[in-house]
Length: 440
Ligand SMILES: Cc1cc2nc3c(=O)[nH]c(=O)nc-3n(C[C@H](O)[C@H](O)[C@H](O)COP(=O)(O)OP(=O)(O)OC[C@H]3O[C@@H](n4cnc5c(N)ncnc54)[C@H](O)[C@@H]3O)c2cc1C
Image (tube, rainbow, N blue to C red; front, side, top):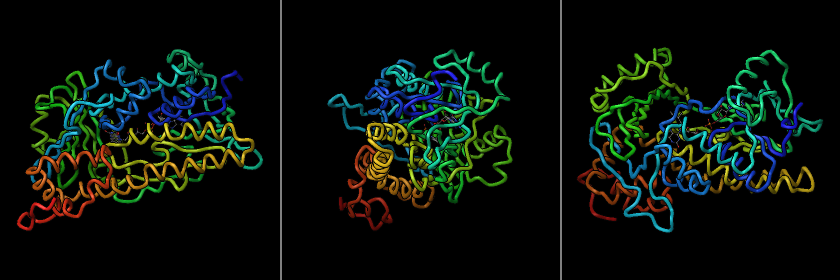
């Protein structure tokens, strides 16, 4: 075994949650090893939009400049097209940024974003092992998690990806090896192996959705906004991701017909049947291979518990939001930032029991930060999929730009939910047109 095969903290997964956790730990001098089954850059089905709260975390990590350097696009607002065709546009900010706080969102391909984040963690001292899949957790006689069991643990640390890949191939048949750790962090995304091993897997309630994601050149009419096109049978998101490329995400109910369909044929047909979006894609060719995600719970999922003795969960491994809201990357990044100090406390603790108190406190802190927001995201996510409701909201907001701005700011977590919970304002949004008066 090499010296790489132990660390104070092993982070399983090098996506946004794992990279942010590793960055938060390594900059405080913690010996942290990130283990990811994939080689970066790796594909991740995603609409690739990050709102202003996420750009602030990226800025704190020193990643934002690099992200713009890689060709990312600043996103200044969101346009929502209701099933009726009525639309409204909300801006994230009224004016230029103040106090150096970014007021725009950003869009960038995940193949570019995720390696930049992982490099930020490396830059402050985190070690990263790519092409190594965690299969199991190692436990001591009391059941406490004391490491992970991996396949291909001989892949070189800091090595070049091709070295790691050939090591992976060569050791396919090799036995599982253990990487010892004082704490294991499951940042391994939706369907987390760590969550499953902790017996904490998220339930995936109905209804379920399936997403198809493609990168295309030449989608007409793209500006600097995230576009959400709602239909009675699903929705489509268009996001300009730089270099004239648009990320197209089509989300539909996960019926057996959709699941069995050839993704390329299905999306071509879907776009033709929805000319509001399809006509924008006439000059573009869908790639022959599309990314498919799901089936996933339309309104997101959450694990029973985000920690267990010696281990904890962060990012999609512990809760995923509805993709229609578009805050999953922020939750992953912010989750890592919240977790870091609790892990440092757990490592300093004089006993395992005291370390577990710190992990338990992390769970409370997550609940405090994300609890209300999750509820609101669920409600908003549900509202966005009810055609009659969104037609009504779009009719109201197309006439009231101030309310449209407020709507997108609440959806994106830029202003607190309480800003939208005034009865007069809710009446403005949802009341039938002839019952509305200026009550705000
Ligand atoms: C269709 C769709 C569109 C979306 N659009 C947006 C959007 O526009 N904006 C937004 O903010 N969010 C969006 N999301 C959500 C967002 O993609 C996730 O919330 C985010 O990627 C979570 O980050 P993470 O680090 O927790 O997990 P991931 O990004 O999934 O990273 C997990 C990592 O763990 C690794 N891994 C998995 N299993 C193992 C294992 N056994 N051993 C080792 N490594 C392992 C994987 O290789 C991966 O690199 C979307 C989601 C979907 C499904």
